[in-house]
Image (cartoon, rainbow, N blue to C red; front, side, top):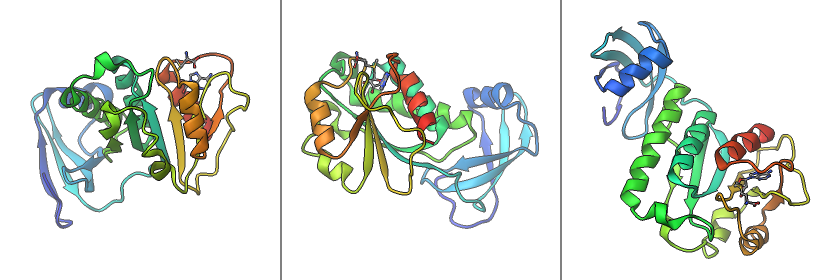
Length: 233
Ligand code: SAM
Protein backbone atom coordinates (compact mmCIF):
# COMPACT_ATOMS: atom_id res chain seq x y z
CA UNK A 1 0.00 0.00 0.00
CA UNK A 2 1.08 3.62 -0.49
CA UNK A 3 -0.21 4.83 2.84
CA UNK A 4 -1.78 3.70 6.06
CA UNK A 5 -4.23 6.40 6.98
CA UNK A 6 -5.79 4.65 9.98
CA UNK A 7 -5.31 1.61 12.16
CA UNK A 8 -7.71 -0.57 10.20
CA UNK A 9 -5.93 -3.82 9.29
CA UNK A 10 -4.96 -4.07 5.64
CA UNK A 11 -4.72 -7.26 3.64
CA UNK A 12 -1.26 -7.20 2.01
CA UNK A 13 -0.34 -9.71 -0.66
CA UNK A 14 3.25 -10.47 -1.72
CA UNK A 15 3.93 -12.46 -4.88
CA UNK A 16 7.52 -11.42 -5.64
CA UNK A 17 9.53 -14.67 -5.91
CA UNK A 18 12.64 -13.33 -4.23
CA UNK A 19 10.67 -12.08 -1.23
CA UNK A 20 8.78 -15.36 -1.00
CA UNK A 21 12.01 -17.32 -1.08
CA UNK A 22 13.36 -15.09 1.66
CA UNK A 23 10.32 -15.69 3.82
CA UNK A 24 10.57 -19.45 3.33
CA UNK A 25 14.31 -20.05 3.38
CA UNK A 26 15.76 -17.30 5.55
CA UNK A 27 12.99 -16.52 8.02
CA UNK A 28 11.43 -20.00 7.91
CA UNK A 29 8.24 -18.06 8.38
CA UNK A 30 4.96 -19.63 9.30
CA UNK A 31 1.41 -18.37 9.69
CA UNK A 32 1.06 -16.24 12.80
CA UNK A 33 4.63 -14.83 12.65
CA UNK A 34 4.94 -11.07 13.16
CA UNK A 35 7.00 -8.68 11.01
CA UNK A 36 7.68 -4.98 11.15
CA UNK A 37 6.54 -3.74 7.77
CA UNK A 38 6.99 -0.47 5.95
CA UNK A 39 4.71 1.12 3.40
CA UNK A 40 5.74 3.32 0.53
CA UNK A 41 5.23 6.64 2.31
CA UNK A 42 7.54 5.54 5.14
CA UNK A 43 4.82 4.64 7.67
CA UNK A 44 5.49 1.54 9.71
CA UNK A 45 3.13 -1.20 10.70
CA UNK A 46 2.99 -4.61 12.28
CA UNK A 47 2.24 -7.41 9.85
CA UNK A 48 1.00 -10.82 10.90
CA UNK A 49 1.45 -13.57 8.36
CA UNK A 50 -1.97 -15.03 7.59
CA UNK A 51 -1.15 -17.31 4.63
CA UNK A 52 2.01 -18.56 2.96
CA UNK A 53 2.59 -20.89 0.04
CA UNK A 54 4.96 -21.04 -2.94
CA UNK A 55 3.12 -18.36 -4.93
CA UNK A 56 1.98 -15.80 -2.38
CA UNK A 57 2.20 -14.54 1.17
CA UNK A 58 -0.59 -12.59 2.86
CA UNK A 59 -0.25 -10.34 5.82
CA UNK A 60 -2.71 -8.52 8.01
CA UNK A 61 -1.09 -5.16 8.49
CA UNK A 62 -1.94 -2.60 11.17
CA UNK A 63 -0.29 0.67 12.09
CA UNK A 64 -0.20 -0.16 15.77
CA UNK A 65 3.47 -0.37 16.71
CA UNK A 66 6.29 2.16 16.62
CA UNK A 67 9.22 1.41 14.31
CA UNK A 68 12.12 -0.61 15.73
CA UNK A 69 14.70 1.56 17.50
CA UNK A 70 17.24 3.15 15.16
CA UNK A 71 20.91 3.64 15.98
CA UNK A 72 21.23 7.43 16.29
CA UNK A 73 24.32 7.63 14.14
CA UNK A 74 25.03 9.37 10.87
CA UNK A 75 27.43 7.38 8.75
CA UNK A 76 29.48 9.25 6.17
CA UNK A 77 30.72 6.67 3.72
CA UNK A 78 33.08 7.27 0.80
CA UNK A 79 31.82 5.15 -2.08
CA UNK A 80 33.62 1.83 -2.33
CA UNK A 81 33.29 -0.28 -5.49
CA UNK A 82 29.73 -1.55 -6.04
CA UNK A 83 30.17 -5.10 -4.76
CA UNK A 84 31.66 -3.84 -1.55
CA UNK A 85 29.07 -1.10 -1.23
CA UNK A 86 26.37 -3.73 -1.57
CA UNK A 87 27.70 -5.78 1.33
CA UNK A 88 28.41 -2.65 3.36
CA UNK A 89 24.85 -1.38 2.93
CA UNK A 90 23.41 -4.72 3.91
CA UNK A 91 25.49 -4.66 7.10
CA UNK A 92 24.62 -1.06 7.84
CA UNK A 93 20.89 -1.53 7.51
CA UNK A 94 20.94 -4.87 9.30
CA UNK A 95 22.64 -3.17 12.26
CA UNK A 96 20.04 -0.40 12.25
CA UNK A 97 21.92 2.71 11.06
CA UNK A 98 19.29 5.12 9.85
CA UNK A 99 21.23 7.95 8.24
CA UNK A 100 23.93 7.51 5.62
CA UNK A 101 25.64 10.01 3.36
CA UNK A 102 27.47 8.46 0.43
CA UNK A 103 30.10 10.74 -0.95
CA UNK A 104 32.82 11.09 -3.48
CA UNK A 105 36.35 11.48 -2.17
CA UNK A 106 39.67 11.70 -3.95
CA UNK A 107 40.33 7.97 -3.89
CA UNK A 108 36.81 6.83 -4.82
CA UNK A 109 37.07 4.73 -7.98
CA UNK A 110 34.96 7.00 -10.22
CA UNK A 111 34.66 4.60 -13.15
CA UNK A 112 32.23 2.44 -11.13
CA UNK A 113 29.88 5.32 -10.47
CA UNK A 114 29.09 6.81 -13.85
CA UNK A 115 25.33 6.29 -13.71
CA UNK A 116 23.46 7.83 -10.77
CA UNK A 117 20.31 5.85 -11.68
CA UNK A 118 22.14 2.55 -11.58
CA UNK A 119 23.83 3.56 -8.34
CA UNK A 120 20.48 4.40 -6.76
CA UNK A 121 18.93 1.16 -7.96
CA UNK A 122 21.76 -0.94 -6.55
CA UNK A 123 21.72 0.97 -3.31
CA UNK A 124 17.98 0.47 -2.78
CA UNK A 125 18.21 -3.21 -3.61
CA UNK A 126 20.85 -3.86 -0.95
CA UNK A 127 19.17 -1.72 1.66
CA UNK A 128 16.16 -4.00 1.29
CA UNK A 129 18.30 -7.09 1.75
CA UNK A 130 19.73 -5.73 5.00
CA UNK A 131 16.29 -4.76 6.25
CA UNK A 132 14.78 -8.10 5.34
CA UNK A 133 17.56 -9.95 7.11
CA UNK A 134 16.60 -8.41 10.46
CA UNK A 135 12.85 -8.09 9.86
CA UNK A 136 13.21 -4.34 9.89
CA UNK A 137 11.49 -2.26 7.24
CA UNK A 138 12.26 1.21 8.50
CA UNK A 139 13.94 2.69 5.45
CA UNK A 140 17.21 4.51 6.21
CA UNK A 141 17.75 8.09 5.17
CA UNK A 142 20.31 7.86 2.35
CA UNK A 143 21.79 10.96 0.77
CA UNK A 144 23.62 10.55 -2.48
CA UNK A 145 23.74 14.02 -3.95
CA UNK A 146 27.42 14.89 -3.68
CA UNK A 147 28.33 11.78 -5.64
CA UNK A 148 29.73 13.42 -8.70
CA UNK A 149 31.17 16.47 -7.02
CA UNK A 150 34.58 16.63 -5.42
CA UNK A 151 35.00 16.22 -1.69
CA UNK A 152 32.28 18.21 0.00
CA UNK A 153 34.20 20.73 2.07
CA UNK A 154 31.56 23.35 1.25
CA UNK A 155 28.87 21.14 2.76
CA UNK A 156 30.80 19.66 5.65
CA UNK A 157 30.24 22.39 8.24
CA UNK A 158 26.44 22.20 7.82
CA UNK A 159 26.50 18.41 7.74
CA UNK A 160 28.49 18.20 10.96
CA UNK A 161 27.09 21.13 12.91
CA UNK A 162 26.32 20.25 16.56
CA UNK A 163 27.49 16.67 16.15
CA UNK A 164 30.36 14.76 17.73
CA UNK A 165 32.20 12.43 15.44
CA UNK A 166 35.00 10.10 14.48
CA UNK A 167 37.00 9.47 11.32
CA UNK A 168 37.98 5.84 10.81
CA UNK A 169 41.58 6.20 9.71
CA UNK A 170 44.19 3.44 9.99
CA UNK A 171 47.63 4.29 11.43
CA UNK A 172 46.36 7.27 13.33
CA UNK A 173 47.43 7.79 16.95
CA UNK A 174 44.19 7.50 18.88
CA UNK A 175 42.37 4.21 19.30
CA UNK A 176 38.63 4.15 18.69
CA UNK A 177 36.81 4.34 22.03
CA UNK A 178 34.80 1.38 23.24
CA UNK A 179 31.31 2.66 23.81
CA UNK A 180 30.26 6.16 22.96
CA UNK A 181 27.58 8.32 24.49
CA UNK A 182 25.08 8.68 21.70
CA UNK A 183 22.94 11.21 23.56
CA UNK A 184 24.54 13.77 21.24
CA UNK A 185 24.14 13.33 17.46
CA UNK A 186 27.15 11.35 16.28
CA UNK A 187 28.89 11.05 12.92
CA UNK A 188 31.23 8.31 11.77
CA UNK A 189 33.27 8.83 8.58
CA UNK A 190 34.62 5.80 6.70
CA UNK A 191 37.05 6.10 3.79
CA UNK A 192 37.10 4.34 0.41
CA UNK A 193 39.32 1.35 -0.41
CA UNK A 194 42.31 3.65 -0.82
CA UNK A 195 41.51 5.55 2.40
CA UNK A 196 41.07 9.30 2.93
CA UNK A 197 43.90 11.51 1.68
CA UNK A 198 45.59 13.75 4.31
CA UNK A 199 43.75 16.84 3.03
CA UNK A 200 40.39 15.15 3.58
CA UNK A 201 41.37 14.08 7.09
CA UNK A 202 42.36 17.73 7.73
CA UNK A 203 38.98 18.95 6.48
CA UNK A 204 37.05 16.45 8.57
CA UNK A 205 39.19 17.22 11.62
CA UNK A 206 38.66 20.95 11.15
CA UNK A 207 34.92 20.26 11.08
CA UNK A 208 35.21 18.66 14.53
CA UNK A 209 35.74 14.94 13.88
CA UNK A 210 38.53 12.96 15.58
CA UNK A 211 40.62 10.41 13.63
CA UNK A 212 40.70 6.99 15.30
CA UNK A 213 41.99 3.53 14.45
CA UNK A 214 40.74 0.07 15.32
CA UNK A 215 44.06 -1.71 15.47
CA UNK A 216 46.97 -2.31 13.10
CA UNK A 217 45.05 -4.51 10.66
CA UNK A 218 43.66 -2.80 7.59
CA UNK A 219 40.09 -3.97 7.14
CA UNK A 220 37.89 -3.91 4.08
CA UNK A 221 35.24 -1.21 4.20
CA UNK A 222 32.42 -3.70 4.80
CA UNK A 223 34.34 -5.26 7.72
CA UNK A 224 35.53 -1.93 9.13
CA UNK A 225 31.93 -0.67 9.33
CA UNK A 226 30.84 -3.64 11.41
CA UNK A 227 33.94 -3.56 13.64
CA UNK A 228 33.53 0.17 14.28
CA UNK A 229 29.81 0.02 14.98
CA UNK A 230 30.21 -2.87 17.38
CA UNK A 231 32.81 -0.86 19.31
CA UNK A 232 30.64 2.20 19.51
CA UNK A 233 27.45 0.60 20.82
N1 SAM B 1 45.01 1.94 2.08
C1 SAM B 1 44.16 2.55 3.04
C2 SAM B 1 44.93 3.16 4.20
O1 SAM B 1 45.96 2.60 4.58
O2 SAM B 1 44.44 4.15 4.74
C3 SAM B 1 43.20 1.50 3.57
C4 SAM B 1 41.80 1.88 3.52
S1 SAM B 1 40.69 0.69 4.24
C5 SAM B 1 40.74 -0.62 3.07
C6 SAM B 1 39.13 1.44 3.92
C7 SAM B 1 38.57 2.24 5.06
O3 SAM B 1 38.17 1.37 6.11
C8 SAM B 1 39.53 3.23 5.70
O4 SAM B 1 39.58 4.47 5.02
C9 SAM B 1 38.92 3.37 7.09
O5 SAM B 1 37.87 4.30 7.11
C10 SAM B 1 38.41 1.97 7.38
N2 SAM B 1 39.40 1.14 8.09
C11 SAM B 1 39.91 -0.04 7.69
N3 SAM B 1 40.78 -0.54 8.59
C12 SAM B 1 40.82 0.35 9.60
C13 SAM B 1 41.53 0.41 10.84
N4 SAM B 1 42.40 -0.53 11.22
N5 SAM B 1 41.32 1.48 11.63
C14 SAM B 1 40.45 2.46 11.28
N6 SAM B 1 39.77 2.46 10.12
C15 SAM B 1 39.94 1.42 9.28
